[in-house]
Image (tube, rainbow, N blue to C red; front, side):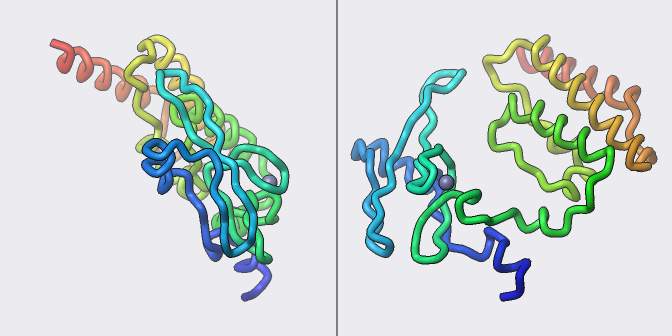
Length: 188
Ligand SMILES: [Zn+2]
């Protein structure tokens, strides 16, 4: 492996909480013994905003909660402890003004979907399509506010990066109106 692929987390075995939820719920598992490394990985849970709870794997190295752990150098640990990065981060451009707006927009979208995690290149190409849907229990006006903030940052990203070809605030307003009408029709 070259240096880049050595750091790419896609090249390592993963332990994903998503694959373990049934096991955890059905058997009330709170600890996962890992035969290969001899480690015991703790399972944590946090209450969700909209009811129920979310499960996490506790990184044996730093003790923080993560959705995924990686196997590298004979041990399981989180992305940060293993010094791994997302594949697309490796090709990411050096810092530009627009990356600030990118990260702001991502932070806003995560309030709607905690798993929202696009790489910069995917984001620039499809930020309109990937904006998360309204969580069923969130008020429309909250969703609208977050959407406004998200698209304002996307617009700034587009302006500062020179990608001003397609997207405008006006276009977004129309999109928003369409969504509202659709929701009204569905609630009838
Ligand atoms: Zn860690």
